[in-house]
Length: 301
Ligand SMILES: C[S@@+](CC[C@H](N)C(=O)[O-])C[C@H]1O[C@@H](n2cnc3c(N)ncnc32)[C@H](O)[C@@H]1O
Image (cartoon, rainbow, N blue to C red):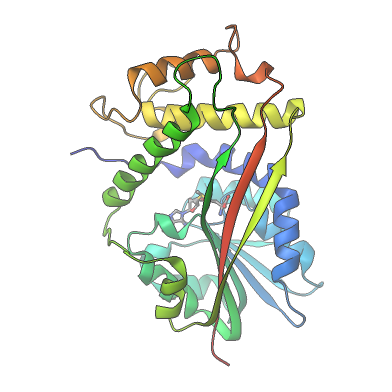
């Protein structure tokens, strides 16, 4: 059976870069989530600590922000990124509510979890653990799902048109195997709003935020975008740019997992080759169009 295990420590640098790259989005969202009187906010599965930092900036002096992650190397990146404004604590959503409660040390007014609950073996149990940490009237915000981002023209002049769509499909198959490979993996055959409701939260809503950067992208945005595609392709092929083979980025993907067709892989190799004529990083027609969803539930008062 194909198994996927993510080594988060090997992703710490990438998570730090995305905390820095998403500072504007985090600031906008944090400002919209914070309410008068909030004293304790938490970012669970905080990665590079981008939202923890934004929450600390959005809350008044004297408020507490706690960043929690299950990986010590990732947490160290969050510690450096948040520069003392945030308390960083090691704990896993897979261990139930108590270690998280101990790490936070007070009922939470706001808990944020972005793209982290879907890495818990039992997602419903994780949502229930997080809900149990809320103060009366506190909010749990899950940033999960949305729409696959679009950046490439449909026809790139290399390979078959529709390459980006097929990368999304391959990633979806990868995601299924990743979830099945998690220790204690439990299916959750319903959506995030139902998960929040089953956890006893009320006034459950979803809002989705569209972000668009039109072409031509700045050199910095272009580099970030190309490295994002490189990461995704390497994750699906088990290669890394340093070695050209092996299990890049800590993702164990046996050779028999053909996530991408040989033709698509050959096209991606051309598009990601900085010395080749088709390098994505020289194009003027790439954009960023993304839609991310935030599902919000309230603890009863
Ligand atoms: C895809 S990253 C998302 C990081 C950040 N929240 C963001 O949106 O950019 C998932 C994060 O969740 C952490 N994580 C994975 N499983 C976890 C668990 N069971 N408990 C706590 N954190 C976990 C990983 O170490 C990683 O930092």
